[in-house]
Length: 154
Ligand code: ZN
Image (cartoon, rainbow, N blue to C red; front, top):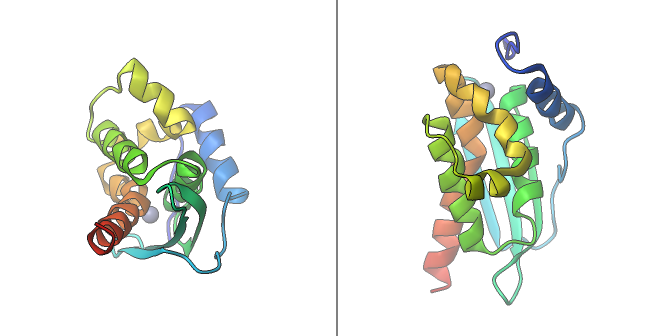
């Protein structure tokens, strides 16, 4: 599998991405997840399995991801889990919308920049249309998982 070339990305951002790829956060499994969701990107062979435990107050208590694939897909999953841990499901959905909007070419507002945190390092991926699916895979799995959980817990 050909990996991502960082030649056209800002060096600093490339470093943030590679750091998450090499030293992923929240990689593994959790016990008794309330949400378990999987995403597959046939274009690149990326696979992401997300597990979330939701507290009584509706916050993401624990979260993990597993899978394999290119650095963009795995680094995004690592960053995403770090950024939504402790948040409510609606905050997580909101961040998903902001991230998707950024990759589709919209400039994040100041408020959104704050929410994106280090996820902003993936902004340059939008210059590589084939890689956008890689960066959105973990968010698609998150959205699916939240949708299903919300249907079962109205
Ligand atoms: Zn990929």
